[in-house]
Image (cartoon, rainbow, N blue to C red; front, side, top):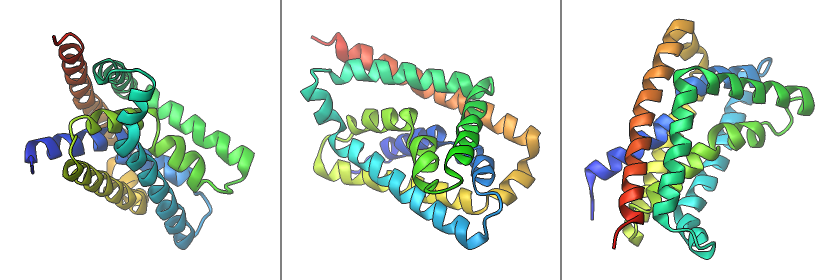
Length: 209
């Protein structure tokens, strides 16, 4: 059934985890010297690859957990703790620093070849946090029609992220250093609250008789 609150929660979780405004300036640093057309191709390919990665985990993530003997309650707790750590990094500006280092390494080693795959799609977009969040959200969409809705949410998230990459220069100029710091911290607080909710739900599920 269509559950608007669940869909909004899923979209919020993914957008906060993906952090499009925070990724925009890093995308600029990865594509420095490229033409607008080249940036369009990199952003398109990276967003599509990241979508298929997250879609695969949304569809088969819980099945993989079942094969490994991991309960969804345990994964919710672990995933919630991971998301909480990411929110901690966002609030204290550690995540941005780590992403920038990843981007700098890719420029040095690969000379911008295949940057749509690495590091844009992996691990900057579809990183551990986004993958964990997707698997956790998948447990809330058990039916086939529900999974279709989750895939739609992932597609919308990727579309918004793609738009953020396309207007990266404008976002960076508009926000400035102060604006980026404020927005990242605000998103970090929201993600922390969502992460705590994941842990609470996981504890309830793990100890349910």
